[in-house]
Image (tube, rainbow, N blue to C red):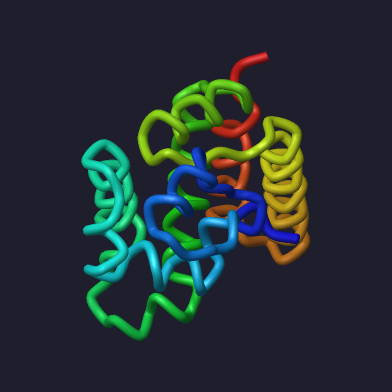
Length: 153
């Protein structure tokens, strides 16, 4: 299961109550995206919630081709956001705090830790394959990216 399947709306019950309709708790669920980020959905929520949802939409749903919304574009953007937070030195608990403050979404720190661990393992594999293929540039890129995730020891 991808990390984006484990990102949830903070204050889900309150939002559902304001919308007067039931939506999935998962942020990247098609139904959640459709209802929350339609013009009508945003008009029904309070101002503070609307501001955070609009920030989320601007940062993750604003793509050049509107069809990209359904091809994983928002999920890729969010994964990049998580990796950037980690590269800034934040641990799983801090990443969850920042995403909650920024966008009113949350994940469990253990899920974030698992995602980061999987990313490190993937980069180790890329690094090893690049070594076998003799692609020093790719090997160095994978090593640097892995170091950004692992941080100083």
